[in-house]
Structure formats: C-alpha cells, structure tokens
Image (tube, rainbow, N blue to C red; front, side, top):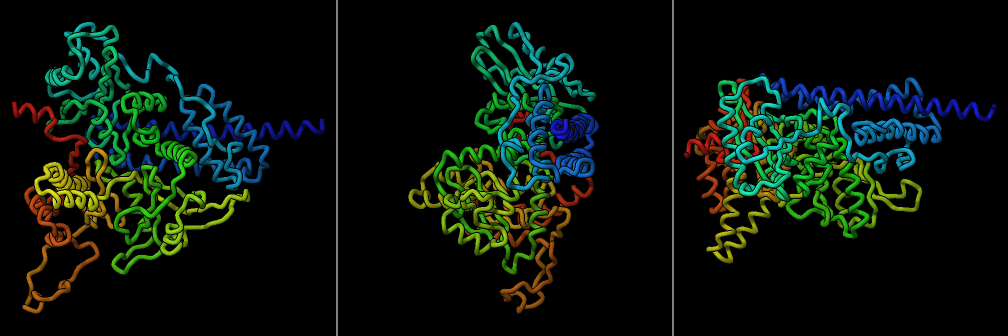
Length: 608
C-alpha cells in the first residue's frame, strides 16, 4: 500500500495536468474558429475595418492562450516543480485524450508550446514533447457529418446540368446578400470551365467538389474546389466580391495549380476559414497543389504555429539528408540584417545586427515591431511572410567559417557556440532568427538581363524579362500603397522575384504606414548657393518623403528608366502618394486582386 499510493497520486496529478492542457487548447481553437466564422458576417455587411482588425487580433490568440495555460498549470499544479516521470505520464494521458479529437495535430503543437515554457531545454525530446506526431490526421471527419462535411459534392449527369449544379454550389454557401446577376455569373464560369476538361466525354465520376467554408480575405470571399472528370481534375477558385451597390458577383474563374498557388501565396495575408477539421482542408488543398508544403497551407489558413512546427520538422529532415553548409547569402549585404542561407534549402535566414550605420536610426525592438506589423497586415501578395524562431541550434560543422566570422563580427549578441546539451555535439546556437522563402534579389535579376542584352541587344527574352520586372516592381509598390504601406527603402535590392515572376518586398526595417508619412515637394532653391549645394539645405522631418527624389536612386539605367517612366511615372509625383493617403484616411479600403484585372468577367464583358 505504501509504495502504490504515491504512484496513484502521481497518476492522478498527471491526468489533471493533461486535462488542463487539453482544455486550454480546446478554448484556443473554439475562440479561433468563432472569430474565423464571424468573417462571413463581416463580409456580408462589408465591415472591412472590423475584418482587418480581426485579422490582426486573431494572430495573437495563440500566444495568449499558451500564457493562460502556463499560468493555470503553475497556479494549480506547480507544474515546473514536478519530476520528469510525472511529465512523461502527462504526455501519455494527453495522447489518450487526442483519440477522436478533431484537431489532434494542433493540440500536439499546443502541448509543445506550453511544456517548453515550463521544462528545461534539455528535456525537449520525444519523451516530453511531440517531436513527431503521435496521432494520425488521416480520414478525420467532422463530428456531425450531416451538418458540416469538409466538402460538398455535386453530380451533374449531363453537360446541361453543369450550370444548375454550379449555381446550387454557390447558393449553398448561404450568403445573406443578393447577387447582382447570379445566373449571368454562373454562365461565365460555365463557359470558362468548358475548355478545361473533356466536355465531349463525361465520365461516370463527373462531379464538382467544393470545400464547405468560404475563404475570406481582404474584401473578397473565395469558393475553393475542383471539377473531376475521369482522370482529369481541374482545381478552381471563385472570387466573390461586392459591387458598388452592395450586391455580390463572381469576379472570375481561377483554375489550375499555378492560379491557386498565387491565391495561397506566402506573400498574402492569412485566410479566415471556418474549419472543424483543419487537416482535412489541408489534405484537400494539397490534392490541388501538391508542390506546396503542408506547412504553408496551415499558414495560409491562419494556423501559423502549426505551420511553424511543420516547417521545422521539414527543416530537420532536410538537414539529415543534406551535407552542404550554411553560407553568407549572395547579393548586396544589408545594413540592418545579416542574411545567410543553405544552398540546398529554399529559404533564407536573417539575424538583426547589433549595430547599424548612422543613417539607420533604429533599434532592435523597432525592427522586430516592423516585422510584427508585416505579420499582422494584409500583405497583398507583395510582402514575404516570415517565420520567427528563438533559441535555434545548428550543427557547427554545417556552418562555413566565413559565416561564423560574419555573425561574430556583426551580431555577436545573437550567437553562442558550444556543447549546450552535454552530448559532445558542438552547436551554433542563434538567439533570434527570421526565416523567409528565398527569392532572386531584383537587382541581381535585372543585372542578368542587362548582361544578356549587352551580349545580344536583340535578345527578346531578356528584354521581356527586364520590362516585366520593372513594370511589376512599380505594381508592387502601388499594391503596397493600396494596403497603406510605404516601403521606405525602395532600392531594387530590397525586392525579390518569385518563381511565378512576381516582385515581392522583403526588407522591412524602414516601412511605415502610408498615413503616417508626410509627402512633400522639394522646395524651390532660395538662392544660387542652395541650387549648387550638394547637401540637403531644407528641413526634413523623420517621416518626410520627397517622391521626386526617387529617380536618381532607381533610374540610373536608361533601359529601366524608359520602361519605368512609361508605366509608373506617377510614383515620382507627390500627388499620387497624397491622394492615396487621403483616400485611406477617409476610410476607403482598396481592392487588391490575386489575379490580373484583365481576367475579371466584368472586364471581359466590356471587351465583348
């Protein structure tokens, strides 16, 4: 009796700790899902400020719930003082509580987040946290499949029934706003779909599958699904927007993997989606975009912590199956961030330097706040999302000596080297690092075009690539402006080219809200001395911007200048910037489309 009683007490304690942790997670996901579901009402009522506010606030939900759970565990169970055999039992009880759970993978990550706040780092192993998933997410269905399936299916028996099926599909979303002309829009979708599959031969499995919840972002809602005919699968998304009278319309048909990859890009804000089983949504989306990592789907669905967990598992897997070394990233070195990469891995790693040149009047905390601003803002396809890690260890042998010297020179406070775990392995331990998807720096991309044109001035492909990059660079700035972002340092080196040819901004240490900037014209010289002065002779405030001065920094190359002035000369005019600032201050929220405007049905009708 005397030996079994403590074991029973420990078991009861472990069970109660596990129950408190699963309760903490369930509260988190209940609040997360409720906020996501409210996006439907905000969309219907066109409450765009509330939609933007909810987008920002929802990002903070996870950390708040983790803190709440840690405080509860310390208050009720003195969790940090419990021996490790109790924590091993806690994990076993927790695994048992995930049987038949609808979000087991998210709950495992929540367990990790809470326990790592409590346990010593040396216990970050599979006995005490979920290094690998313990519960499968395959074939999880909602608790009440009749009320809320993951996706709905429609089975037109003939081609003539396709249009009514499409209309029923849209109506089943239950939007409480009338359409401008749903029959017309469905006809446009129908006509755009027909060339995409073999409409002359409908197979027995001919069907439409569409995810149950709409995907809400910015001022749009998206129906996401696929058309299946035999072995053909056509992924699609239907953007639903409001017209000027508040009625709804289907704006276009997005189809194919590339279109959907642009819609779910890492450079766009997270969607609001009402999901009971997130893994089922991810599995459906991956069937349409198999090249996209699961981590990025969780990010796109607003489940950034799970995305971060999966990214790190993928990274560790890659490290085990590669032998190349981290190096200083190619390109012009930044004044604020130290950037390095692993050539075989499609991401870059960024450290905030300890010291900056005099022209960079900033602090580490201000820079971190800029990155947080980007995380919480609508990135409109033009700002790269970042993963933020604290306390990351890397094998020392995977770092080049030059990179170690660079970090020790410019960011010595951020690096420790040694055997931290007492296992004989020497690690490079980085205290705080940002990770972004790797892109080709725009200045390097343009230089490659210039080099090709220097060899052959008639190289049509190089000229087309150069012109596209310059035009999309201007479009990127205008999209940022529409989202109330002034990028600050607009040099070419601070932008990159994605694999889809999109120009994306990735240097955030000088960004500001457009509405916080003061756009000014350069004053006329007071005298000849002013006119000949090589220095700025007029007063300049910390957020004063002089658009007409952009030209000398950006347009030194005559080829670039010609294209830029043809398409984006307005970016050098103070009126362009001030007019957008005034509209945003007046409450206007701009439309920013994840597709070319020429693809909109309304545009095509005008041409017809």
